[in-house]
Every structure is written in structure tokens, then in C-alpha cells.
Length: 394
Image (cartoon, rainbow, N blue to C red; front, side, top):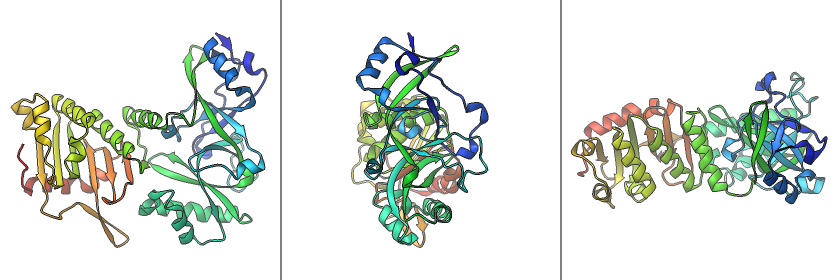
């Protein structure tokens, strides 16, 4: 093992905040130096091959980008951008903004680092009003169709217009704070670097060891899976959303894995679950642990649960813990968003984990692995319907 300093010399490892600068703890301000980070021969060869010495190196403070598989304590390698490159960044690039300590936003926070980490989404012209801006962004960020997210967005945009009143073009970026998504708006001059590589660090006594260095653009699906597993394993109260079908499946898998007593779900048709071997195997494992499964199905055009019974050895007692009900034709759980009624599908693990598709006709899905708010809203209604709806025979 060699010290990282043998590779980068006296190059400084800067600090970058993944989260709200106002909430940064003073104890976290000095995580790493090149003197206490060790590297293997293999990592050194990777470092030289990728010419990482040409990048700025940052130590990450905070957890608001775990969905990108960037964790507190990781090192990120950023390519400093020239004026032309700043205009060429793409949606979903992970970028670093320079913090202007003299601005209204940060003048009362004198001890915070100089940089913050965000996920870029798009450019915004302030020549347009809020509704036009939202209409332009929705194709990129479908979550803005959700009333509570739209409300957060408008509030943050109005604040940015006051602080950055002399700017005509802003960069919209996001991170994930506490139980919700958060929006940031910056001017082009504040954009500093685009992240290219992430180094995972393992603590070993008083030293830190670089375990691997990966490109941030590689294995995005695998990173999504790891991020959801991380949140579910630790029961973190963190809101996440996506339009990817793989996101919904991974969120369901984690609910089926981590639920202890009861899984409730409302689905358009049961084949949403039964046609996926991974989901069905995890549901089987949950039943073997003594769990109870209650599902409500809107359409029974494809009845496939018999395949589940035929494929797995279930005792009569285990079969008795599966209850499937069907709504009358056209019946759905629904919610009213600004006067528009949308059917919804969802799955709840115990009382604090959920996956929700808030519009049955859209691909957008949201989840949280430690929040009772959705259960409190719909749990009693669901249980009432389980009592009165007709059974689907197993």
C-alpha cells in the first residue's frame, strides 16, 4: 500500500457538500487528506491509466446523492469546465457548483466549504413565467406533475429569482434532502466541474483505503439497485422517484425483502407481480418467514397466481396468509390532483415502506422506505376494502 500523496503530490483534496450547506456539521469539515489515504498497486495503475491527476479531487460531505451511488466520505474526481463546456453539460450529469460566500444565500454561513454537489437537470430562461417554465421542464422531470413537488419547485424558483435577479439563464439541479426532492438554481458562472469518477473509501484504523474507482457513467442500473438497497437496509426516510420501470421493480423487491409482517398492494393486474420471477421468489420467501399478503386487483384478465402455487411448495397455512380481492369493473383507488382524478397503484410494506404510481397511466413512480404518511392516508381505506370486496380464488 502506498499513500495517495505519492500519486498526486501536494494536490489538495477539496471538500464538497452533498446536501444543504446550512446543515453541515463542523465535525465533518476535515475528512480526508492525501496523507491518510492508501492505495493498492492496482488502484495506482487505474489512477495513472485514467490520468486522474488532471482532475480536481473532492471529499464528499453528506448523503443527498446516494441515488447516484455517491456516499458520504467518497472521493469524486471532477473535470473543471471552461466557459464553452459549461453550456454543453447534459441532463443528469453530476456537477459541482462553486459557493459564492458573499451572496445572500450564504453570507450568514461563514464556515461552509467552497463547493456543493448536485445532479443537473436543465437550463431555465427567466424570461418565461413559472407556468411556461414548468411546462418546458415536465418532459424532463415528470415528477413536477405531482402537486407537492410542483409546490416545492415554485417556492425555490421564486426564491432564486430574488437572489439571482440580474441573471437571465439559470441551471436547475436537484438533490435529495430528508424525505423529499430538493431543487437548486445557479447561474452559469457558479458551475465549476463535471464529475467523471467516484472512488469508494474504506476506513482502516487511522487510515482510509481506496477500494475501487469507477466511472460515474458506467453501470447506472447497478448503481440504482445499490442505492435503493442502501436506503432500504438502513430504513432511511428518503423520498425518491423515477420514470424507469427498473426503479419500480427494485423498490418492490426491497419492500418484499424488508417487510416483517404484512404487505398490502393495489395493482392494475396481478401479472404486474406474478410475471416477474424475482418478485415472486421474494414474495415466497416473505410468506415462508410468516408474513401476510393482501392484494387488491383492478383487472383479472390475466390470472397467473396459480403458477405461483404450482411453482412453490406452500403449506395450507401459508396459502391462508395470501388474500387477493378484486374491485368491481372500473373500480380503482384514486386521488384528486387539482381537480383531476387519477387512478393509482401502490404497495405498502408493514406501515412505513411504500411504492406509489400516482397516475396509473403514467410511468412515474415514487417510494420511501421509512415514512408512515402514505400508509396513514390510505391504510384504513385499503383494509376496509379487503373486508368487503370479493375473493379471487387461489
